[in-house]
Image 1 (cartoon, rainbow, N blue to C red):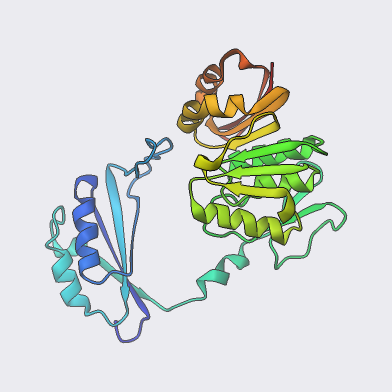
Image 2: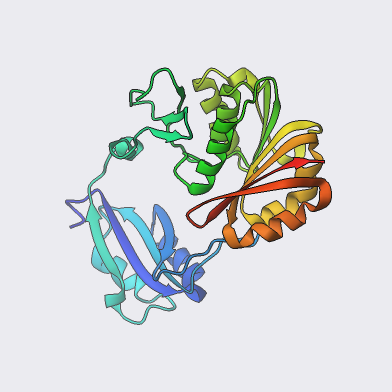
Length: 296
């Protein structure tokens, strides 16, 4: 198999107690990459800030060069803590692909609301006269397919943002920022802790001819006050922690638009923003909630 395949994938289910040791052993054996996924259906939706969540039972996958001796690799990995027998070490091979372009087969234009579309760059816009945001998914989060992103994009589609100052806090790919700029925002400040997200935001804004309106920043450079609209598509725990920063950024009468919140978490998020905001509205898509309010 090793002589005919470009890569070898080894998958081993173990308790999360043994994940770190197994990951280290795979890397010592020459793994090109190590990834984790759930063995069962136990979602981890709210990890603590700064931590990598793991499920009780984890499928650890290692990607190895195709010329790696399979039997020797299996023997070495079967000695890892948590591996009870060599049969627990599953090996498969596959040929190299153009992974950067493989997503195109499934990527299709998506409409949000009445007139806002996200159109992959290899596709023709279904409605050329509509607002067509051209986007190729990169390493950063945010291509419009997640319900929380959809809720924010639909809010943007419903509102006239001409001349407004907007903040996209936790910008990911910058899709919300770009959409806001294309809807007429005069300036959009984007914030993310991930440098890759800031790069993706800058590139996506330039690709849609709004690069001059979008300003990507790390959190320690952020000092906005008096914004007309605050967009924050982040998990609820982070929204609650950032409530003072986000709330103080919005001018009186301005909009606060939050997503990344599960329906049962909405009440706690609203409480975190206190009396600074009123007229809360909640719209749900699947198990996710989109919240909006006005600053008082």
